[in-house]
Length: 119
Image (tube, rainbow, N blue to C red; front, side, top):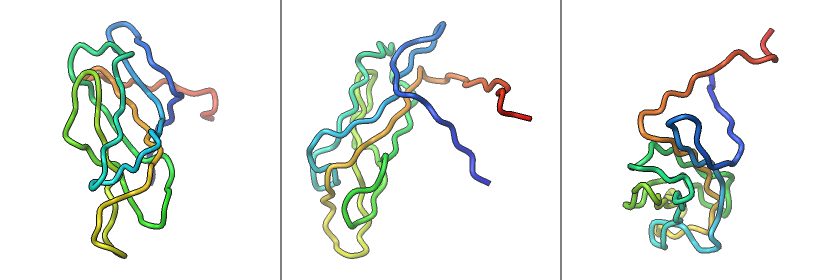
């Protein structure tokens, strides 16, 4: 079984929960041997570090990779690398990747509602 959840890109708040959901690339290489991709969370106005999930939104280049935290995680930003496998080479450089993220006020409960598509 595979579970998934889909979001539209947006930043805002509902009652006491702030959120930032988006995708972006920065035009620079994002591997562990390169500079990290910076996800700007300032527009969500988080009071504390949010809970955040980051993924790569597609695959670029010939080497596989996955999103990995890069040290900085605060209420205003998250740094992420495209951590590359080392199957074909030992270097850790990786091309510019498109990152996707969903950040919510810490300890937010996402409550599902019944869909009109359920039958």
